[in-house]
Amino acid sequence: MFEAKRLTALFGRPVALAQVRRAAFVDGMRSVVPALIATGAWALVTGVATVRIGLDVGPALAMSAFVYAGSAQLASLPLMAAGAPVWLILLTATIVNMRFVIFSAGLHPYFRHLSLTRRLILGYLTSDLGYLLVIRRWGGGAHPGPADTRQVWFFLGLAVANWLTWQSMSVVGILLADRIPTNWGMDFIGVLALITLVAPSLTDSPSLVGVLVASIVAVLAHDLPMKLSVLVGVLAGVAAAIVTEMVRERRGAAR
Image (cartoon, rainbow, N blue to C red; front, top):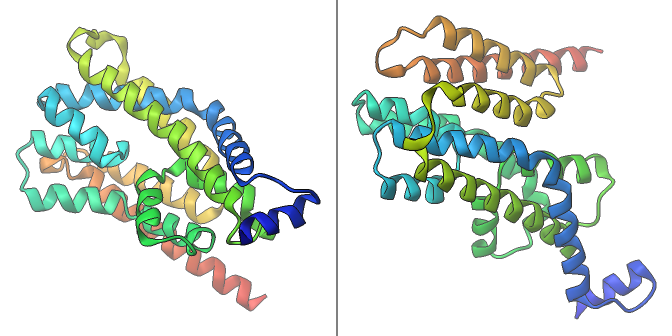
């Protein structure tokens, strides 16, 4: 009731709550459409890699549905193939996904009024792309109040579209992994898709330095046992980004 009254005050006329939610949901889906090609390509490559690394179809499908994190999946798969201990696989996936702690902190002001169950669902649906689109739209103070239902349904729209694209293309990759020729260069397609998804978020010096350092260290550490180059690269990139942010803050305070 309160939400309906507030929406009436915002739009100047009675507005059905369902209509507002539907419009926000569709708006969210439309906002993510341009990036779904890259998401689909990345999911396809991840699905193919999951099977080719040695997982059966059933566990591969479960991994896609429950993990729902391509970077963590691809970081852990070589470790699984190399026979690394479980604790190392879990540690690697956790470190790779640590960025979602930052995403959660950034989204908290918008969704803190929701119940724990709803926040957990939104947390599962959160992606790099979804966080970037939300911050671009609502960042800088030019956004509705923290209890505006349009925010929730806008986020749901883009998150559901992204999830459906990821799961469907991942399933295609898993089921057709044995039929896709290895000379198609799927790994290169995956790299291009990942660059397309990551590049728009590199908007400041800490993120740029972090990506650069992580890339260089991962290449230099390529010969480490059990495919530890990815873990070492991630740790180095995170450390470099933190140091860069601290230096930037100190310079800003000095000015």
